[in-house]
Length: 273
Image (tube, rainbow, N blue to C red; front, side, top):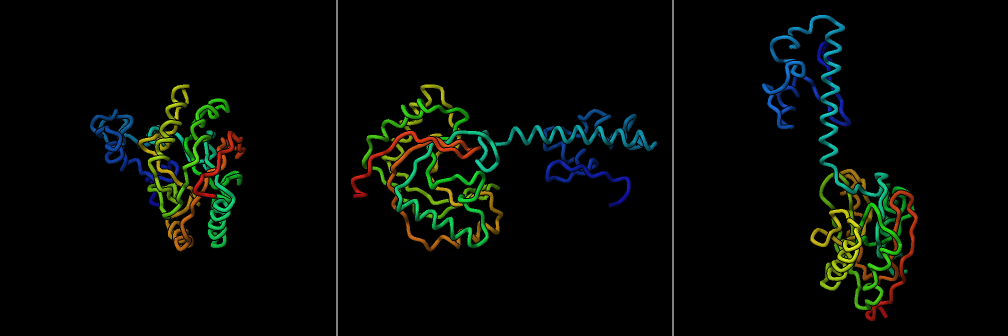
């Protein structure tokens, strides 16, 4: 690297101070002309690049500039981060989940095994390694047993809900999530909406991706995959047949420890008999 050209690294981003003074600052809504002279190494006058002549003063000014830039990038990254991170990131939250009948659970676990056989980390070995095949209804920072038990009461009386796990899909973005899409029937969406209304009434705030107007019912097969791994994963499971899953249990999973607290056993659907 040429001498006298410092490179700042913030997480996975490499930034040159002279470039960021003109281009990077525009990303944060600040024009170079509006920057204080001490923060802009290319500005004229005291504190400018022309004034950086002595070794110690030069190093101190650049170190100060790098620290301010790192802090600004870090604040921006935090503001843009989703409120509820995926379970594999280590964020502590509570997921209210639907669990399947033994036949459907076995079929999903077979898909997980197909991914593992190709060297891909499926939900069987992701994070705390305590995952069961499931569909999440809600993820919240706080959720008690009593709150969940009261909210799922309509589900305990439902005998007409079958989850059709059909299409293989991928969520957009960098999370690398491959999942089985669940057919969003009117009955399923109605129960989900009522559950959220009951929890909202007692002050439980759901992660935005699980709110009724944004929810995509799904069963995750793998997450945290690279682009190439996503392609391999889709090819590994795309030929498998759709699964009709009967809901037999609902529980709360601690996304950090993996511990599952059973909430209620659900009646088998009439169509599953």
